[in-house]
Amino acid sequence: MTSDVALITDITGQDGSCLAELRLGNTATQRDWGYAKEYIEAIWRMLQRDEPADFVVGSGLHHSVRQCVEFAFEHVGLDTDDFLRTDPAFMLPAEVDTLLADPTKAREELGWQARTTFRELMQIMVEAGLEAQERAAGRRRSESR
Image (tube, rainbow, N blue to C red):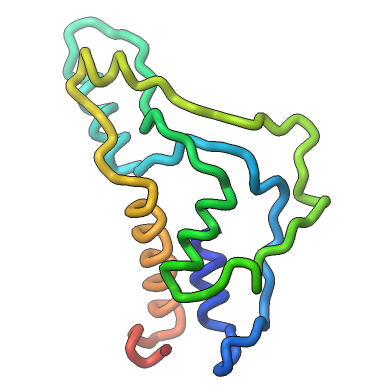
């Protein structure tokens, strides 16, 4: 989604008009969003243990898909409502409303906890999408805006 937001910034008209849409299914679903770089650290800590054990890794916080999209559009100065469309074709029949991790054991036994906020994660993801577009187009951000 965030890479799609980055792409939309590249194909928005000079007057800000909508030249593209982001079509999604249920944007009300809640997810525990996390930064893979931090999850790798948790896995590394698991591997340092003398005895194997099961751990749940996550932030312990949930945010909707809609919030993800809103933060992403906000980061690039666009209005979500100008681009986001709900598409029944993307509705999943067995959609789980909320997925939320309980990382208590990882915090207590591994000394690990997520540090990157949801907003920071969305910014990282959008910036990565923008940078990928720039590389693909052979230009720098200052040339594209």
